[in-house]
Length: 128
Image 1 (cartoon, one colour):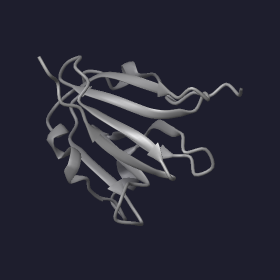
Image 2: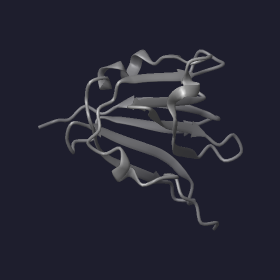
Image 3: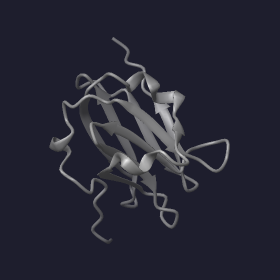
């Protein structure tokens, strides 16, 4: 199995920082090609590798997000929140298919899955 790394940056660079926008790109009604969480002048960008369906997470300059990017209503609640913890999910075959985030804390709240070359958003409802 090849060594794969989902996070292409040190997450500590954004942990605790406030999300000011959430935008994405899509070319079909179901799922997203890319989703970007804007933090100051940078963005945490999630994409799916079309060959493996793995989720890749990068930290990029946010200046290129104006053209062709639209608001992601499904996660607009994250705007104004701070990045909390993150989790990386690897399936039994070794593929990095899931990325989970919390906002303003450590309870996981939203999960991104790589499915059929798109990002699918799943909300996690905490039961107490």
